[in-house]
Length: 453
Image (cartoon, rainbow, N blue to C red; front, top):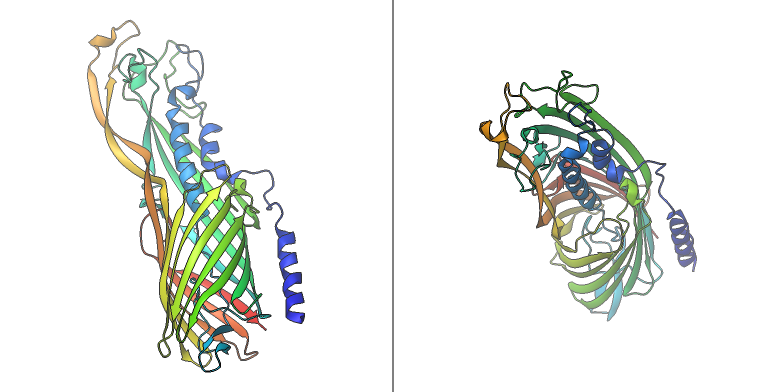
């Protein structure tokens, strides 16, 4: 009864925290769009008599695609398993009942089929930091995320930029993004029945985003042309042909609350099968990348076995989401690995795990021919068809619907500290196995503690 009471108090405290995230008035989820939309301005001239910004509205469309891809994937970072680390039950054929086992402290990112046992309680926390280096293989340091924005077709609306020579100019944009997240995940597990565990996990997240954009007018058509007042047709207000735009921010708050129920379906000597259902609630502030803004449901099947000291396991699941400002793709998850004791107080845990975002947004930089009229020494009275046509290759940033695989290899230790047989220290390192999506290309460290009684 004491353990049950403590679990109820702890769960109530966690749910009470699940209010709005600490975000202030900022909106990190639209930062890339904002830096283009609100700070990217071209000056006016005597010919047009108005801003030319709207003539390069492709910039906002491209920024929107980039922004959506970042938002969609940033909320898919790996979280530590809610599996109990210190106690578990497995079937004892001799007594024809469940019995406590302490041969292994369990996996780190995967789940095992064994349950804790009625009245057992386990809680703890983990900490992990990710510094993202690339997205879909494109570096974020400004060396790869570059593209050329073309002018709007203001002439015959035939899809070309040849009807009016001023349409031939491009704007080159090179974007550097510094994106990092820190997550401290609080979790608790309670054995409602011998075969049924209930788990709760709540991440506390800090997100830092900085966007620096260098923009340059590429005067391909208007190379030596200016209006009667001597002003270039396309130039940034007060900056000439180049400008640098910057915007950044930080948000800290709770993420999406996860509630999971795991039921042991089959328990046999040395093997087991369990099913789990997980619900993620939109308690994190999606405007500041602390949560998805959507309600998610995940169904998970868990198989595990024991062969001497070796305990392999496999998890497979499917997730779908509803609601939220950004449409989130369904996900297929998989984890395969093993855990084994290498000492009475030390368990080695190894996993390959991750998920596939189905029909997600994948970014790519490609090249296409750009045709333009060359006005070098011409006047406004020069007929368009007398101006020579030039062609160059321009960089295009685009998105396409495709599956995105986010998988990791992880290895670590679970160590029972000498202060208590139920206090477990987790040290784990993981490394990304692919180039899809947002990637931290370094080795990622995770540390945690959990306590069971």
